Length: 289
Ligand code: PAF
Image (cartoon, rainbow, N blue to C red; front, side, top):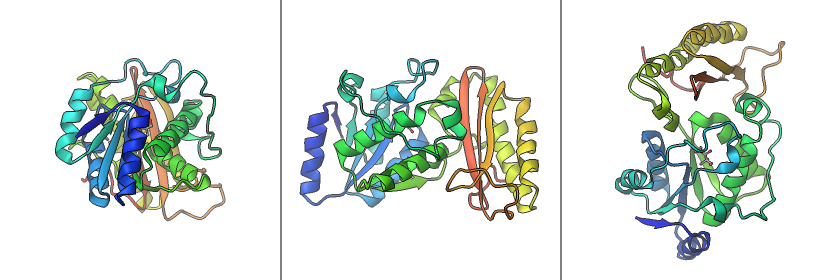
């Protein structure tokens, strides 16, 4: 497995691979890899000839008060996890190469970025759109694989790719969970032993939401149930949103009962912000009871 830091070298390497008629599968990450990331690598490996994984903690998607500085970074440990899964190349550029001082171009996806995390992390999706577009241009993948745990991010990237005619297929893979149901996340490492069991309230509440949805409970009742279930375990709830799973828009009051609906949650325990979601009527419940 090669590790490439230089942008021009990466661009040249990928151009040569494409020249030889090989398909590049790409998994963008910020490192601190867990099984959720490795499942994305498995999918890229399955559908493409060469797998590139980027490891880059992107400064432009973090707000000033967020965890950019403390975000876990361990390239050697990540490389050890990637090699046995068949990744061919790690792309690990520096922030100063990705964003030279004269870089002033941003990308703003409207509408689907306005609610959920977009409302609580101003500028976050501009940073994601910017870095993902740059990475696509450097690597030129045929397929890029993202996790559905970052559901809004996945929709933003699908929109961006369609709107800008980027020649890459976007694949979304199911959220990978710990045996007890907690969605895997690099940020779970911030949870203290006391906080870790409290974090499970989200997966439990989303599982309850599936049962309520199957019984055609009012959408407001489902949201209220989740609110009540989280209030004791979490210090702050950023949002609990039930929305159309494609547009991410709330359902109008007079709409028919939906056949599928996204329920997405962001909540904080101490300094740790966790997100999770499930599509009612489509996904399996997070916890099998
Ligand atoms: O999901 C992430 O880890 C990041 O948002 C991404 C897509 C790698 C862009 O920095």
